[in-house]
Length: 402
Image (cartoon, rainbow, N blue to C red; front, side, top):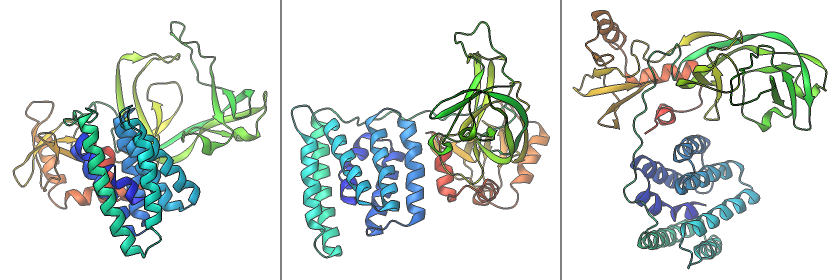
C-alpha cells in the first residue's frame, strides 16, 4: 500500500498546492513508518484531512488521488484483502486516466503491484527498503513522463482565503445547543429505501422555479445517508403510508462547519426564500457531510450558543500578535498573513474591524481575552466543547479553505 502511494507522490509534488503536497508526503511517510499497521490517530487524521482536500479539489485528478489516500486509511483500519484489492484497482485506474492515450500506464502500475507483492515475501525490513526504492524510482520516472506530455499543472492556482460574513448570528466553529419541538405529521409515501412525511411547517413558493410537494423523505436505513438533525418518531423503518408520526429535533449539541449568506435569496421552492444558512455536525463527530439548516424558515428550531472560539474577534478582523505579525482572522481560529496561515502569539491587539479603526471597547475586549493563555489553549478549549476527535493541528486543517 505504501509503495502504491509512493508512486503518486511526485505527481502531487509537481501538480498540487504546497499544502496538498505536504499533506500527501506526510501521509505516505505515516504508511511507511506504520510497518503495515497504521496507528488509529494517523489513520483518522489522514482520512479526515484527505476527505477535506478531496472536496476542495472537486472533480479533478487531485481529488481522485486524495480519494485513494482516504481509501488507504480505511484499508489500514480494516486490513482486509478485499479492501486492499479495491485500493490497488483504484490506483491502476487512476494511472490509466493520468497517462496519455498511446501508453498503457494502468498496466504498468498493475505490473508494479505484482512486483511489489513478490517483494513482500522477503523479511519486512528488506522488503520495505526495496519497495520504497522501486516506488520512488518509478514514481519520478512516471511523473516526468506525464510532465513531458503536458499533463501536469506545475503552477496550480491557490484558492483565495474565504472570509465568512461577519453579520451572521452563528459562525464557523460555534458550538450550539439545538432542538425543535416534536410536531405531528403524516406519512405520505413509503418506498423500499425512504418514507416521506408531510413537512408540517412548509410554506410553498408559488413563484418558484421548482414544484415541491411539501413532503420530506427520511431514509429507512439512517446509516445509508448523511446525518440530519431532524428525526421521526417512530423512525422511517417503522412507518407505512398514511401512518401518523411526529418530526422534530431532540435536544443535542452541535458545531457549525459552515455559515453562508445568499444574495439574491436562494430559491428552493419554499418561503421565505433563504438568505442565510449554517451547516451543522453533531458534537463528537469528525469530518463528514454537514447538514444545512436555514435560519429564517417557519420551523420552530431553537439554537443557543454554548461556545465560540476567539469570541472577542469578528470575521475579517485584523490584529497584531506579540511577535509583530499583522494577521487577518478567519473563524473559528485561523489567522493569515499574505495568504499563509500563521499561529499567532498572544496577546493580540485589534487593529481594524470592517476596515476601520475599531472602538476602544472592542480593542480592550480582544486584549483582555488574549492576555493569558495561548492560541493552542484556545483550540483545545474548542476541541473539549465540540468533542471533535482530532488534534489541534488537524482541527486547523479541517477549517482551512486555502
